[in-house]
Image 1: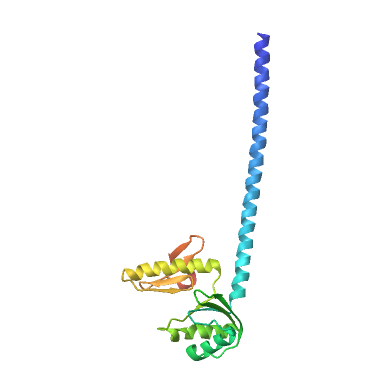
Image 2: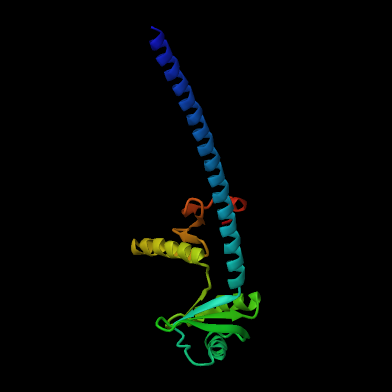
Length: 197
């Protein structure tokens, strides 16, 4: 009988020790999960900050596609194209050939106002094989690509769709890109409630 009591006592002691170990592991797992959550949030903040810095760096840039600008003086060629075909006199701080295969040039314009004037006048290139676009970050490019895909599908159905920066006007309604949901959402009817992404 004593032997059974001793075995029972030993077993209970082992069970208690296992429970203590299990609580310690659970505490450690909880601590690791909390630390992982903090690191994930910090990484997201760093990525957002880097995205803002990259966006600021590209703010005055334009992308010219199909302009046949492949000479040794690309900066001068960009200024000539903007003057003759777009009607905007500008000083280009820098221009570089990004893709010879696809004939893509990125040019840094002297200031924001001049860049906006170029973007407003780029419709003069309609009908030619030269296109001017904003220089988007990788994330912005992916969003714009998704929106253009949606717009193309809607146009294929006969619905009028116009693409803007992180938005689409489709069938007379404005839809904005929600970065958290990773999709277009219908804009509220009250203009002050429009989401800013």
